[in-house]
Each structure stands twice: as structure tokens, then as C-alpha cells.
Image (tube, rainbow, N blue to C red):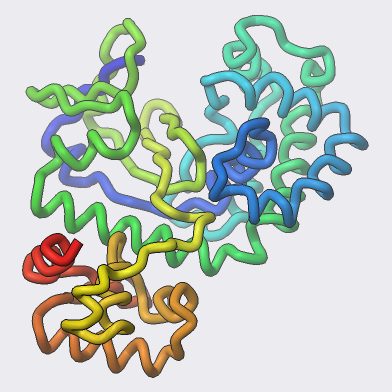
Length: 318
């Protein structure tokens, strides 16, 4: 499925959504990565020992990690985005557990190129994978979901702002490496040489995650999703303002301005910089008054981002 045909109605109705289940699938991939990125290691150090113990006692989990997660094809029954009205991990997991064995077996077979491990060729495989995902959520993702979801929301605000400035052609190119807007309603999702699929009448959603690489999923015929890597989820940004900018604005205000890529909330900035929330708020008001930053609400949170003037100032100082 190399090209999706996306008409104006599908594009107009597309949206960004958060998915605790998809983030749990992504986290499981990070835990199983033999060559993690340096910025992933602090999180891995906290959870890898327990994860290895979990695999040691569960042959189905070991087979899933050793075969399916090592391929470039994510079975749709674990990678589908939330449906309308599905809120929270429990609701998404409950839907996953309703997957028939026949469907799960076919998708696992496709992911494993026809060589399904015997541990996965069993009628209860859906529930066993559900159990592994429930463990991963409860032990590694749920304790910091509030933080992750704030960063995902900031990523979404950043991409919506970029979409407004640059249009869909540029916005989708930055989501997944092989994705390109080809024009005439054609969205290339990968390099596969397969017949184009028409999304007319379907819903298209974009889901940020901590995965190193993204993937696409579908719940035929009505839902399609692009899961993409959100910037800087597990890493605490090490950005520091240029010294010249610090002399102009003051060290703290310059540091906050430099860190507003992607947009961030007051609480995120406080966590990153170590400043008090009240102090961060005071500095942001000064930057707002100077028109170096602007703000936008997303749900219950307010995110700050650099204006064009703020971008020019940071760029010139850097």
C-alpha cells in the first residue's frame, strides 16, 4: 500500500489524536531495541531489568518481541488508533481483546513473512499479547503518561502551526521519512509498489508516539492512521540560549525563548529549567508583551511558541 488517495473532504476532516495504546506499543518497541538512541537510555535503565524478567517468564511475549517487533510491519490489531468515544488505555485494550484469532493469525503471518513461531500459533494469542501490553502500560508508560501526553500535545500544536504556515505538502513530509505529498490528492506513505488505496469517505488521523520510526495502520474500510515519532519525548532538552541573547533579555528569559521549539506549556518549561511555575509565568508575560512569543490553547493546556520576531532574534543570536 504505497499511495493513499486523499480527497479534499478526507483532508479537511483529518485530525491529530493521542493514543495510550499506541504509545504502549511504541514503548514496547523501545524496550526491545538492541541499539537504543543515547537519549532513550535513562528511561530504559529504569525499566529494562523488569522487562527482561517479564520476557523470561512468558514464551509468547518472547516470541512476539523476537519475531513480530523485529519486522517492519506492525499488525493492525495492535496498531490501530482509538475509535471515536474510546478514551483511555482500558477502552483501547478492551477493543484489541475482541480481535478474532483468525484475523490476528493472518496479520501475524503477514508480519512474519509466513513463518509464525509456534508460540504465537495459539487461540489465546490475542489475550496473551493484551496481557503484555497491559504490563508495559502499567509499569512503564502510565506512571509518566501525564508528562508524555503534554509533550504530545505540544508536538501537535507545533505541527498545526507549521501546517498553517507551510501547508500539507511540507507538514506530512516531516512526519515519516518515506512519506511525501505527490500532488493531485496522492499521499505516498512508503516505497511499496502496490495499487493505490482510495480513502474517500474514510477518517484519517495522525498519532504522535515515542517510536523511533513511524508506521501506518488501518481499520478497513473507515479508518486510517499515520503513527509518527514525536520530537524529544524521552530526552530532557539540553538547549541553552546563546550568551548574546542572555545579555539582551536576561539569562532566564533567553533560555525560555530558546526552548520553545516545539511549543511548551508553563509546567513543561518549569520541569525542564528548574524554575518555579510562577517565575516561568512572569518571564513568559514579558516575552508576550515584547511579541517574541505567542500562545495557543490545546484542550486544558496553553502552549507558548516563538513568533516570527522571536525566531529571527534566536536565529540572529545563534
